[in-house]
Length: 203
Image 1 (cartoon, rainbow, N blue to C red):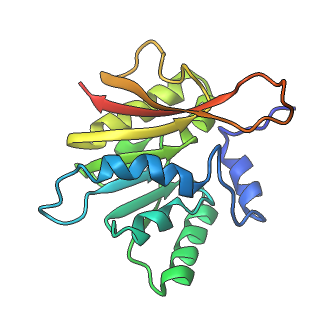
Image 2: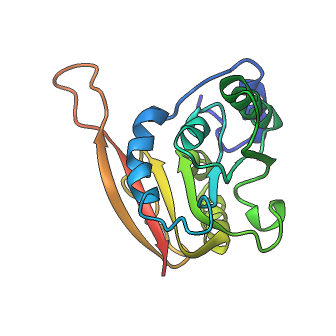
């Protein structure tokens, strides 16, 4: 039976016991893909504004802080995930400086403060979970992201799909696969399977 990744009830039950899980790739590896993009952003007025969508029980938020990025908003629509993220930051760093918000990534226009903008939006396979609900939730997520991106901002998305954003009605983005990442094989003769790191910039 397939998992109900698009349903909040699935995540609520899962996060009752799950304390740590990394989707597709480790946060340490994903950070090596994100950091070169972040390093090119101007930092004249402080740290870039970063939005992580579907933070879950990943430790990606810690990599932002370890590298000096503090203006980070981590969102998930499951309160247990938000509580866990805040607790982990305090355990690792001794305090909490990043933001944690209960929000639905398909309804960013109403779940985040009006007119709030970000320089960078990041999701680590959240787009895959959202897509389990069909095209409409994906389009809603993409529309919300585009609306929240500041001028010159971009969206970095990690997915298992080579055609994740090849959907009719996608808001105007330039979509580029910047990394094609081979996954581990169980047997030598297994076919090649890849994860895909997308860079999306509003047109």
